[in-house]
Image 1 (tube, helix red, strand yellow):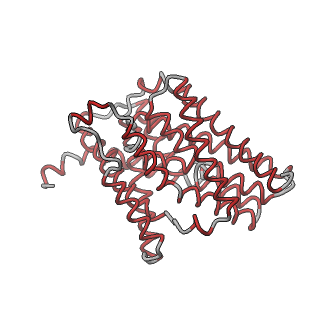
Image 2 (cartoon, one colour):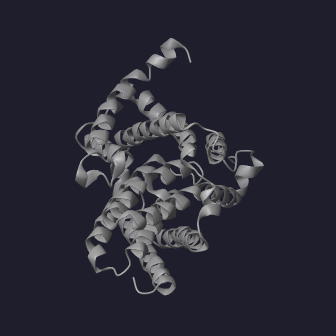
Image 3 (cartoon, one colour):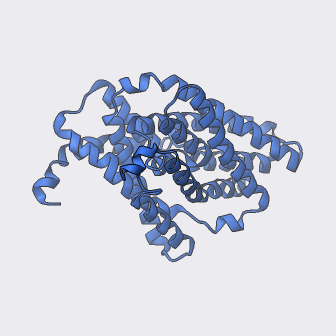
Length: 335
């Protein structure tokens, strides 16, 4: 990229930085920790867009941040994967997480389809609900062919539902007979890692360990889930796309990078200091992308699907809580 070409991105990147800085600052506040910097970056971007329309010169930079930086952030997100957890987790945790992900994909997709929602939006909601919130939505956006407004709305919905869920589980904790069961329930159903850690920390060390293991096992299942979705979505592309040679690959190159880095990280070949730095870089780049998406979304495009998406997110999360809670009650005894 030549220097004059790079300069065209400068106005948009300058515009996107203040919302990102504000999002990370807000994420340190006790009441907003469960939302996380990614969801907050998107929400701050949307709020700014409510009162201010970016000037045309910012367009190239916002587009670069929302697409190219997002892809780089997703590649680096692979360092969080630990595929070894799939073998370390006990059968109860692994089967519980597999069931949660399968139920989220099937139920959220079906309910969203019945409500007339676009495929990209309903599958983004399913990924965010079933696996790991905003990170899963960002990683799967290209696989499910989600538009930027779909990504924006899905992240907003799962951030809200996860925050409500984390607060609710913390409030009902005193009435649970088994704190271990509640920790597993949090790890198997809450959207973001930060939400799971917040609930687990309130329950005690043993419950926190179980909650973290259940959640990180779901994160590890992101890779095979995207592989499966890539095959399913590609097969359902219109036949004309195949004839014209326009069908996208099963997995875009940056997602192959995500899986490759995840494999390397799972083998323990990345030093802890480097792994921590890559995780931070991934979070910052993805937050920049979320803010850019929020700033670039035409808010009128969200009006038709905003309330239905919230209902679908609520129904999906409620059914996950109910199903996972029932399984744990039957397996471990009364919660």
